[in-house]
Image (cartoon, rainbow, N blue to C red; front, side, top):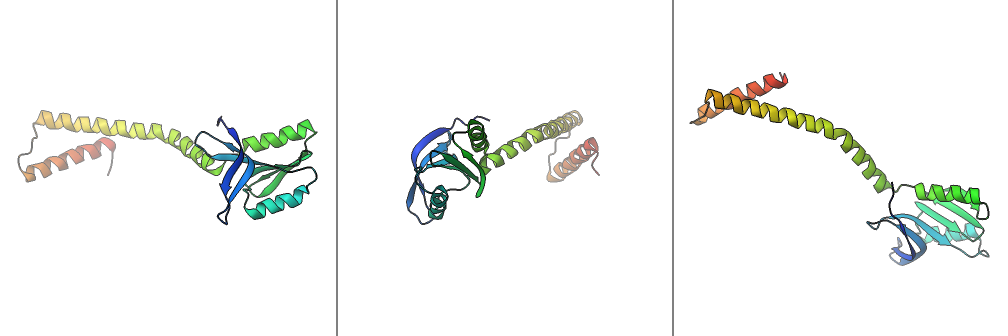
Length: 173
């Protein structure tokens, strides 16, 4: 499903300590949910050490690419998923595909709820249709029989009769 992601550079976000950190990039959707992060380091930096440092500061580890112009490392859900040499197009494509296909938990939960709702709608619609048909039958019977209660006792009797008709219509015991 297309999310219409936009890359924001120098994207600010709060650290666990309450300070503001800035990722080199963040992929944001229409409703401002972050789908992925990007952090660029210099080639002279030790990429592994820089990753540890950034994580210790509170950088997200749900879906982030760390790269140093020669190597890219994809971390998802706190685990290193892929590492590639940026000069290898096939490896890079695989890493980027994995990165862009990552589904953030709230989107995954929404998708599952939407699928379940779509499956349940026909059942709910059928049940409502049945209830409306029963209500129409009760209304017709009351109108034809001219059962129009004038006292509370007559109302209770009419209600019991209507409930009995409804139960028999749906075969409830």
